[in-house]
Length: 204
Image (cartoon, rainbow, N blue to C red):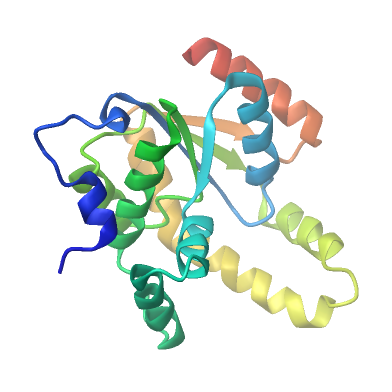
């Protein structure tokens, strides 16, 4: 079944702008500061920032038929197929008017990576990995969620476990291809961005 997203990117005779774009995947455990640092990169280096989760939520909120299908999948406890997420990313890149993109929290697993390469037909210029010890991530999230510590500690540990099991293999894959750029995210935010600035200046 063709979706509105398919319709927007299906003409193979035209080369969409995003196929000639610079794409940077941004990975890191929960609480590693990805969102903060992405906002800094957008401001200083004119990238457009996309979060796969935000795109899914926006599509649901739009009330479109496609959004209703995504909402139904989530309500039934089904995982949204990688192809849907990737097509939303492609559509967002095409409509942005920019040619430099940060894709935050993606790919989350090996399937995401393979589908992105097959559907978008582009590889990331590099992968920005915010490396931070589990203890520091826990401390940051607990500080963010003060008053709900008993409810959250197990959830945090589960999220980190999923990250280690699903996303670290992606980090290792891109490291083996020479595309990983690792940043020590345990430092204060300002120091982390100084390292990020040096990296993006050298990559541009």
